Image (tube, rainbow, N blue to C red; front, side, top):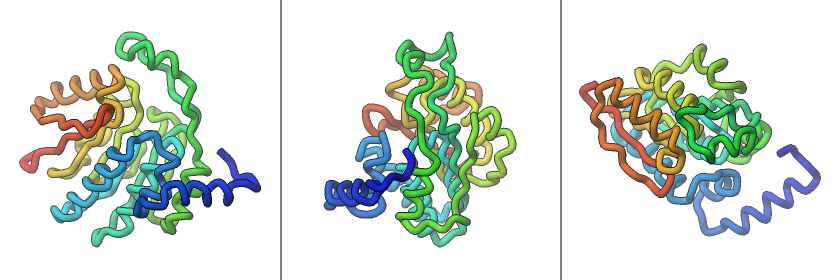
Amino acid sequence: MHPTPFTPLIESAQKVQHFGLPEPIRTVRPHSLLSLLNLLFLQELSHRVEAADLQGDFVECGVYKGGSAGLLAYEATRSRFPRKTWLYDAFAGMPIANPNKDDRHSKEIEGGFVGSEWQTRRIMNRLRIPASSFSIGVGWFDQTLPSSPVEKIALLHVDCDFYDSVKLVLHTYYDRLQPGGYVVLNDYNSFAGCQAATDEFLSSMQLRLPVVTIDCDAVYFQKPLAA
């Protein structure tokens, strides 16, 4: 999506449609494929890490049009800790599915669901998020994640559906997740590859953690405090 003369009108109509919702949900809801429950729970987890005095940044892998990214950045800027929000997406549609690990539906949507860096930045602007408080890494994960400068993570949002992507994200960032921090997997219940990558990762790390259901798609788990 790119700006058009109708963009302000469309945003005004969306604001009316979601009038009863509080910010940042009201602004981000039209630009996210997450369920309302999932968005609210993502916000809840950001509040939990704050209440637990857990320092660290927020990271999202799989941005699409910036809905959940805006929510995370909004909450990060309201923290009493210096949190930054790191966002990663190629904005070029879905990658190639793994022929052995991903399901048929994954193969059918290769190249689909093309996100928008412009729309993501537009949401940040509408929510008055300072440009210095978030970073957008554009490119395929195997190109961007190896050089990711994130050091400490309080909340990791994994919204990248496919086996190879989810596996790379978990292997890249779990060690940087602070004890007590959370990992949200938006597609665990709806994409076989996401579930396989997550289960294999937890098993390889000898982590017997409860994977808690959020809705029909998403789950989360918490890094042990003793880790």
